[in-house]
Length: 455
Image (cartoon, rainbow, N blue to C red; front, side):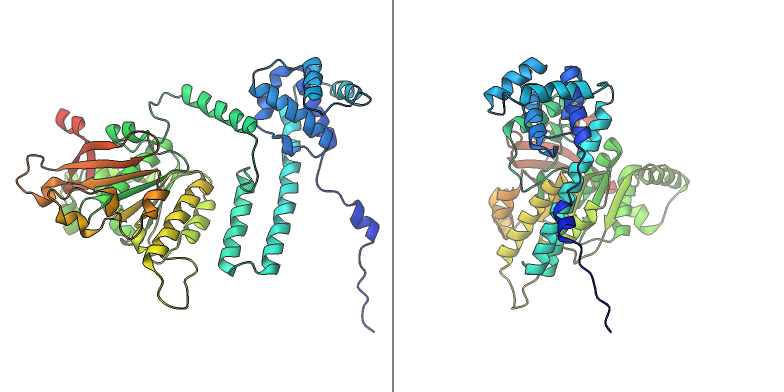
C-alpha cells in the first residue's frame, strides 16, 4: 500500500504571515516622535515601504517627507501633516500616536529597532523575488542563460537594497541626494569620482563616477591598454577598493609585466629579455610589493560575455571599478544558432549591456574600443566620434568617450614628441575638450605634462 502524502491544512496556509515585526515598527515611530534628533539616523536605514503595517507606513512616509524639507517633527506637526495627506482618522489616529510614544521606553535604541524592521522588509522582498524567479523559470521566459542572469540581477538588487523595478518618490530621491551632496562637501578631494592619476583629465571628466560607462577608444598602438592599466593601479591604490580587469586580448602575465614596468619605472625591454641589474631587481621588489597590497583581479578569458562578467563582479564585496579590454572582441552570452549575426547589432547589444552592468554594480566601467580606419584618411588623422567602430550605439550608451591620439606615431618630425592627446569627445559631466599628457613608452606609463617638466 502506497504511503499517503498529507497536505498542510488550508487554515494554516491562510494564516501564514510574511516576515514582520510590528513591535519594532512601533518602536521606531515612537522614537522619532519622542526625539526628532534620531530621524536622521533612521532615514539612512529605512524607506516607507519597509514598514509592513499600512498605518505605520503612512506615518513614517509623512515623517520622511517632513525631514526632507527640514520641517520640525513632533506629535503635533506630524498629526497636522497626516491630515493634509489624507492619512488621518479622528477616531483612531491621535490615540494610536499617543500609544506609540507610551510603549517606547527610550529613543536611544532606535537604530536597533530600525535594523529589525529593515531585516524583515528584506526577507519579505526575498520571498517576492523567489516567487518572481520561480514564475520566470516555469513559464520559460527566454533562454536559461537570460533567466539565470535576471535571477542574479534581482537577488543582487536586494543585496544592494535597491529594487530596480520600483517607481521611487522624488522625496526619497532628494534625501539620498542631500546625503550625497553632504558627503561631497566634507570630502578633501577636488573631484567627486575616483582619480585616474592624471590631474588634468580628472578635472575635465570629474574623475570616474559610479554607474558611468567610459569608452576609451583609439587606433592600435596609441596606448589604450597602457592607460587603462595605469588607471587600474591608481584607483586600486587611491581607494583601497577592488578593481576587476577583463582582458580578451592579452594574458595575465603580459598585463602584470606592464603594470610592474609602470609601477617601478623599469625599462620594458629589460623585463622582456631578463637583462636586469641589481638596481632593477631592487625596483622590481618595491614595485611588486606595492602592487601586491592592492586588490586588482585579472581575468584573461577571450570568450567571456558581459553576463559572465556581471556575475563575477557581483561576488566581489568591495568593487570600485571594472575595466574591459576590449569591446570589439566580446561576444553575446546567447549566440544565435541560426547563423552569422549582424555585427553592428551585436556590438550595440554589448554596449547596452555594459551600461546596464555599470548601473547594476553602481561602479564606473571603462571599456576599451577600436576606432575605424577612417581616421587614416585625414590629415592629421585625429579621431572623431563618428570613428567608433561598428556601432553608433557605443556613443549613445557612453557617459564619456575619451579618444587617444599621438601625432608622433604618424609624424616622426612633430615637435610634440611622446605627447598624447586625450580627446574627451563626449562628456555628460562637463564640457568636451582635449587634455595633453606625457607618454613614456619605455615603461608603459602616462604622466601629467607638468609633472614631467618638473622632473
